[in-house]
Amino acid sequence: MAWTGLSEDTFDKITTFESEYSSKPHLQYYQNLLDEFDLKAEDCIMVGNDRAEDMVATILGISGILITDNLIDSDDDYPCLEMTAKEFRQYVEEL
Image (cartoon, rainbow, N blue to C red):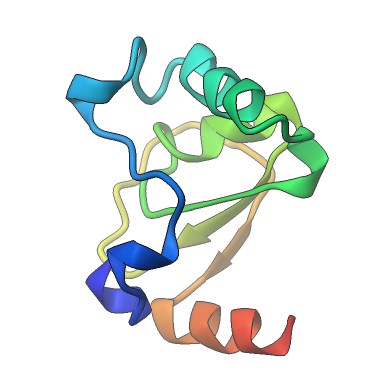
């Protein structure tokens, strides 16, 4: 999270391997979070640098933003925006 300039205090929850019943890239991981916070997939964004483990969330209807700095790439092809960390910061500031 350091590259975002955000503090851990900014978030209601930060998942860890020890705190969850499933993990990325399993869809149940994302579904559990949607259910826990009573969220609609279309109201959420998954931001990450791993095409396979992070962008799989788009299958549930979550929008994806793939950060290309330090990209962990794969042959998986999920619909998502692609941008650098700097571009992402600008994108968020414009929301």
